[in-house]
Amino acid sequence: MKKGLFITFEGADGCGKTTQLNLLKEYLIDMGCNVLVTREPGAKGLGERLRDILLNYDGEVSDRCESFLFLADRAQHIDTIVKPALDLGQIVLCDRHTDSTVAYQGYGRGLDIEQINRLNNIATDGLKPDLTLVFDVDIETSMQRVGGEKDRMESSGDEFFNKVRYGYLEIAKKEPQRVKVIDATKPIEDVFEQVLTVFKTFEQ
Ligand code: TYD
Image (cartoon, rainbow, N blue to C red; front, top):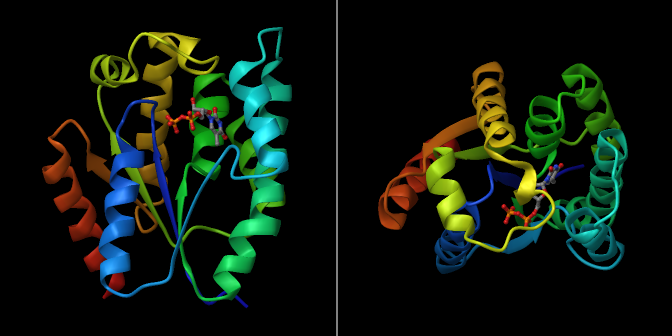
């Protein structure tokens, strides 16, 4: 049975979620918590190979194949890293998870959302995050933060990223209990204040 806490960090590329994840990690460690930081795609081992294909493969990748590669990475990640950590009572902070597939492959690439939800459910074996933070930022700001060198996913264009952003906001509307939207256009300290407010409210 699950004992720990599973918190996921989501948002379009360049939204600043990784910086915020690390700030929350430091905060929790200072509070004496046992924290595990991990990510999708590519936590370690097989995941790193899948990540390399997903971000760097320069041949054709069909949208369905892309989805299955993310889902394969997720199944491995849940089984070998996330579940064991939760069973030990750890707080798991995960950089991207199921909502990325809904936002990117569903809303972004246009695959069927309900089908992705079902596939996500299979990949996670039914495990759901306790809390999800969506870092919302306009596309101009996020692409500025990404910079000049873009990987395969980051090269998908503004129209794609507008759909991804819209997708995340729709997910938050559908699951307001689990998913909280953070205004990520603000300076790092202001964003972290929002993160802490959400976290403390959630803890009570
Ligand atoms: P990454 O370098 O980890 O991006 P970021 O630092 O922004 O998290 O690359 C992961 C990329 O993969 C990112 O563009 C989002 C994308 N992605 C999907 O399209 N679907 C998914 O299910 C996941 C987990 C990630």
